[in-house]
Length: 76
Image (cartoon, rainbow, N blue to C red; front, side, top):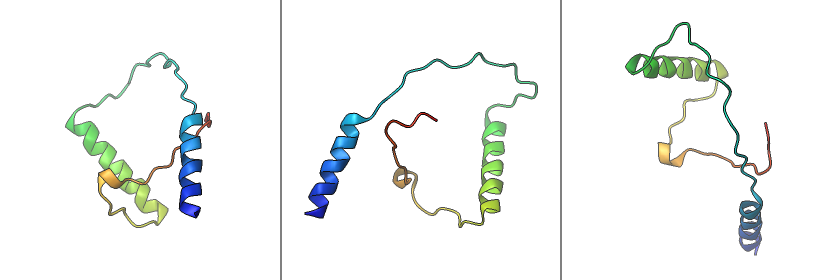
């Protein structure tokens, strides 16, 4: 019974989700641009450093199993 109620609530949330279409701000000139492999390498290093400072263990799940949560109506 609880699972049925949960599924109904999830379906109601899906039907009431608000998607907002907007425009992006003007592109600013990048004073120190990088791209390609250097950009990927930098993001990898910064992500690992940021994660390690949190004290949390590194995730071990597959990319297809990334835990996400959709919050309908949030505009932040």
